[in-house]
Length: 183
Image (cartoon, rainbow, N blue to C red; front, side, top):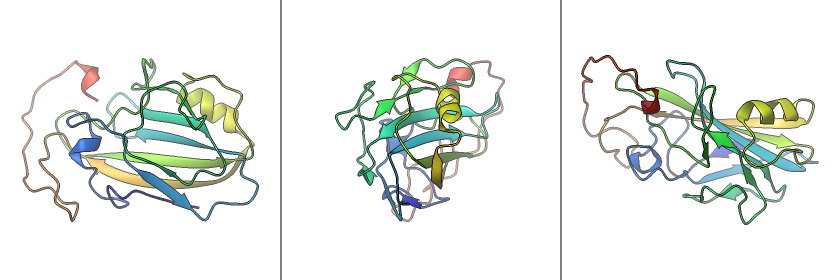
């Protein structure tokens, strides 16, 4: 199975409009080469480079089996028009937000953002607002195949060119911050 975005290439820079510094719009995604027998899809976006641990930025599950793409800017509703459910995100241990929460790492080096799409043999018996851990636990034994798309983002990295490269380079100031909402 393959997962792509028209907004950025695998390993490339996530545009500012899809970040917490920009418009915070979920990026467009599309997938192909789906295995037979798919009953639903689940999508989890995380930041493995966040200082406090694996930071969850998006949980979307029970996507219909015939679906092959998501448009940019999905609304942060518990249930979308296509029946998909948003889980809770924006944290490591406490999760207070439904829908997409774009990259917003602390000042410093770029972080990796992993979009993991799982093809499942059926829908998950979970309500909207389920956490990534609950979704992952419910998926055990039901994953047919997975596809990953990785983007990078660096706070204050400047505008992104059409080629996916920063137009300016900003050296971050060294400062001590205890505000974990910046992750």
